[in-house]
Image 1 (cartoon, rainbow, N blue to C red):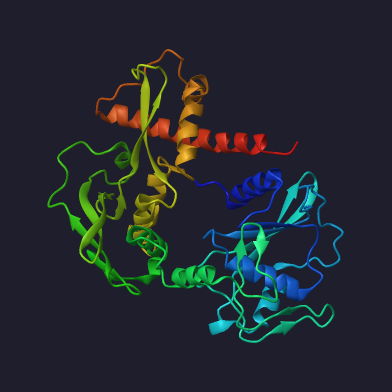
Image 2 (image 1 turned 45 degrees about the vertical axis):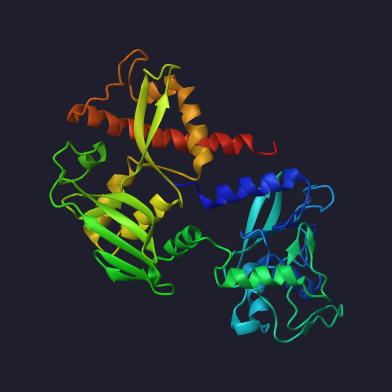
Length: 392
């Protein structure tokens, strides 16, 4: 299981607060905006940020010191629906408005509101009709493009520099991405792909294609350990290839499990060593969340097929999914330093042999058990990191 998104956000926001500075994609506010025009201006600047990622306006934090004061007593506090309604009532170019969410986090016993401005390729966001706050006389101007450079927003009465505006238009058409980066972006939207079984193309950019070549026969080798979690243990293999104008961008092995009722890319191999000579080590399988292998794993999954859903659930019970490559490296070190914990969960003595790499059903059964324990330890590791990252 991937870390809960609320936990990931909490950890990130804590790190930004501890930095005691603002930057290209985050801004601290002592309280919610008094002026709707200032709120709108800040949201547009963040939606047009050049960091090419989600941006945050963090309410309840002093912008100079990073001191947490909370928003519990803030009379101007807005909820998500109020924020969305305020954006809906403004006339944005093409009717395309920034997408926002608001989350409330508890940090140092205070409530912190985090306004998340989601990253999209629909930049630049700008108004086609000026909006003036009648109370403060602050005005967000029509056809002015605002952005954020470093920790500074474009002035409300000015437009961004021409090079920044050019970047935002390039982003809209994907011109800032390499073909591989664009492929990764498009794989995140499975609904934009057209085709069936073996050949697919992207509806918006047909130059991107996916092709599947299946093996002619069932594999003669013993199946991988995860095949033993299925009702039908037979496996066969194939290849999925991603192409751009006929040039291969990526190629991954795929495996047909449970009598071909479920198909997935094969997970990566991971190894955890308990001695410097690597004579005592365990192997397991994993995905990195949102990398090419994991995205293709999602692409191949037929969520409308009941049997495929059951097989996928059993498959993921023994496959680790890391949030990123750094988490994989750190977790393997964590397990390596906690061999005793691993063996306790396996109900084994510390001197028992679990390092047999031969391919037998008994060994694969042991590997299934080890994988389930590693998934348990991964959740405990994340809880441990979360506690260490606390402000207590």
